[in-house]
Amino acid sequence: QQPVQSPQAVILREGEDAVINCSSSKALYSVHWYRQKHGEAPVFLMILLKGGEQKGHEKISASFNEKKQQSSLYLTASQLSYSGTYFCGTGYQGGKLIFGQGTELSVKP
Amino acid sequence: EAGVAQSPRYKIIEKRQSVAFWCNPISGHATLYWYQQILGQGPKLLIQFQNNGVVDDSQLPKDRFSAERLKGVDSTLKIQPAKLEDSAVYLCASSLVLGGSYHEQYFGPGTRLTVT
Image (cartoon, rainbow over all chains, first blue to last red; front, top):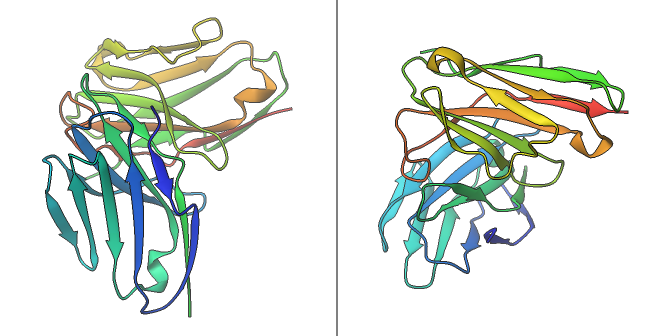
């Protein structure tokens, strides 16, 4: 039931783009995205509630394909501050949020 | 607006000892969550409260873990007795309303527990 994130890790140079995927084997009601820096609490980025919904947050955006039961997080023109571990949290009927295993993103100068 | 507060930030205990963690959610947030995050993994929900009632505790190891949220505000999570596999970061989160999957959750800094 835990969503699967890919890739597990990615290394970028400043200014490069990245895509992080989150897939579920069950029908989704919502997808949350959080970023966690080492030793800190996860920080909320965005939530997608409808199939096909897309949202943006600065140069970070996400899409939600309800039919395919998956979501993607897009990071464009990456900055050093984007480094961290990105988690998707998938919401199912009943309201519980289940987090993926995380994608570690490193942005190098 | 103050964030979610947790204490202590770090705790080292020996196996079979007991430990307690405290959490104060964002003011006005009705829903409170306790998560366990093992190194290299995503947070795993242990228990969810709506005001002072339990909504979901299906993944709480009830033989050793207990949690309460008296008066619907702050909460404590206890482990007694602790095992080596309990070593993890314990995160508290809160959200404004019930419906964990429909509303953003705000996390506290966590308590890093090491069981030796």
